[in-house]
Length: 304
Ligand SMILES: NC(=O)c1ccc[n+]([C@@H]2O[C@H](COP(=O)([O-])OP(=O)(O)OC[C@H]3O[C@@H](n4cnc5c(N)ncnc54)[C@H](OP(=O)(O)O)[C@@H]3O)[C@@H](O)[C@H]2O)c1
Ligand SMILES: *[C@@H]1O[C@H](CO)[C@@H](O)[C@H](O)[C@H]1NC(C)=O
Ligand SMILES: *[C@@H]1O[C@H](CO)[C@@H](O)[C@H](O)[C@H]1NC(C)=O
Ligand SMILES: *[C@@H]1O[C@H](CO)[C@@H](O)[C@H](O)[C@H]1NC(C)=O
Ligand SMILES: *[C@@H]1O[C@H](CO)[C@@H](O)[C@H](O)[C@H]1NC(C)=O
Ligand SMILES: *[C@@H]1O[C@H](CO)[C@@H](O)[C@H](O)[C@H]1NC(C)=O
Ligand SMILES: CC(=O)N[C@H]1CO[C@H](CO)[C@@H](O)[C@@H]1O
Image 1: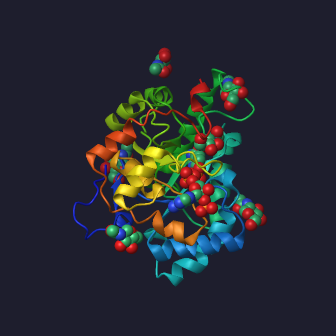
Image 2: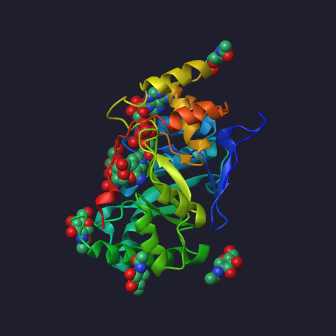
């Protein structure tokens, strides 16, 4: 769904992937979980646009949509960008699963907060409703109802959602969805890094239905440095004159996952977009076989 450059004329930060409905998305979008406050959001987005980021990943639960919306009002003119030059992703909170009206309210609240007439992509954040036990079998019908409501707001590209997708869905969740809807999600955003490589089943169903995999917590999230200090990652970084963060992001891209690195630090925002160096097959193999299994975020496997 995307190919990395073989020459140095194209910067990776400028590359876009084509989604299964024909929309295009930057393969690097800026993650914004835990970036809050008007001043901080403005500083981070200002740096990101200057560096060349054109995609932003947010969610209702991140509590920063309003501040992103007002930053965009200032920054798009500053960088001579139009709304259609950037790609905005938001996500439906687990508490907003349910009937059509509830889902519609959630979508229109995000649109109002972000002060935009449409979203480039809107994802179901989590395959279960809040307040229910994850193993509860009624989650299947609840998330199908949510999906069907989203397909109406998508309306084959004519609606306020230009594409719709999912997050934290396992292969089984996707099979269930495809079994009862003709609208295929454009992307599935999941935890993915050398310590948590997802299942073969997830890779193969996403490949079969051209669902773009988008990696989150590529750097291991913000609560620990296990991945950024992993000895194999560190050695490969040293040998390639890269930072460990760059090795982790480049590895995900070479595995055909789009990425959404988050940082509030201007130098790191730049570093995370500077990913043109190719990792050798040998380095890729070493990372693929790192042999450590550890999840740093929530676990969708427990959801029926
Ligand atoms: N769909 C979902 O359920 C879900 C779940 C989790 C995340 N996400 C999305 O994915 C994004 C990324 O995941 P994440 O926020 O969990 O974490 P992440 O991107 O794996 O890591 C962020 C942490 O790494 C640090 N960092 C960033 N760049 C660095 C660099 N070059 N060198 C060293 N440290 C660096 C950041 O610190 P500073 O900020 O202090 O620089 C922060 O502490 C989120 O922001 C969100 O948009 C989605
Ligand atoms: C769905 O998942 C939630 C946990 O997220 C759980 O409490 C609930 O019982 C599950 N079942 C149904 C029917 O939703
Ligand atoms: C959806 O839109 C595309 C063009 O954007 C068109 O080719 C296709 O026939 C439409 N499908 C339906 C079901 O309307
Ligand atoms: C597909 O749907 C049918 C009927 O709606 C159901 O009986 C079957 O169990 C479903 N299969 C999967 C894999 O969910
Ligand atoms: C290593 O990378 C740094 C920063 O990108 C660069 O300034 C330096 O010239 C590189 N060194 C070598 C030996 O390539
Ligand atoms: C989805 O997974 C991410 C990463 O593991 C986690 O941070 C997030 O809380 C999860 N979402 C839900 C609703 O559990
Ligand atoms: C949805 C949203 O944007 N919520 C909050 C974002 O953060 C600011 C603080 O900077 C709050 O005032 C908003 O309510």
